[in-house]
Length: 263
Image 1: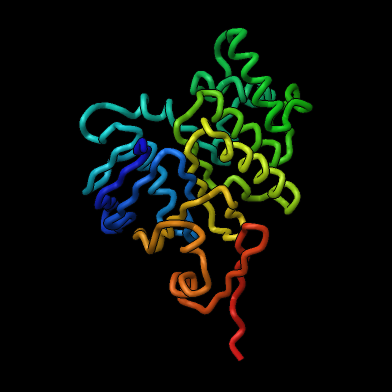
Image 2: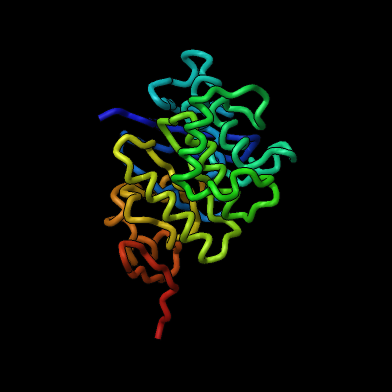
């Protein structure tokens, strides 16, 4: 199988603080991973590393066949990674509509600053249709609901046919209905045989979809455990992870987490 990501003994230190400590992680094409950790676990540092915003202090990083330190790779690498984060929303031009935001993904730009081709236009319409965004394609992006904005950002990320799609807490700030609708769209993308490998970042266990077949548990900058989701996400393992007794119940292929009441 094709290796999408390989981290070997990766650490990252900033001043006297260890942000990442001895991280080993391999992702094969066709796998879809959950990156799970509480606030401050190091998830943001790990994503910044994968996107080549900084290099590791120690260790080896290879993403999409490109080894860090061998060549200047940031621009080339990021063109093959679709990255979705709510932080992008504030960086988009105030006048752009949803369709223009999606089209800008074809050029890896924040805003549409050039004439598009018919092929790009058609692809943008098709992606909007698949994600259920076509009805508000001409509305100003910044007037959309949070769920609609995130759906459009996913469309933008898909325009470049990325090999790797990173979804950084995409359901943050969504109500239950909007969250479930967005998760349905993500599941649709994950099911595509020729679709991108997905890294889904969250600190909400109930967002783990059946399509996410692998999970990495990150705690205090270290890999607590990683492997098959159905073997990793259980009451015993997560009680150790949280250091409190918890219960996991699987319903419709998704886990539900609760704190265990001790009698």
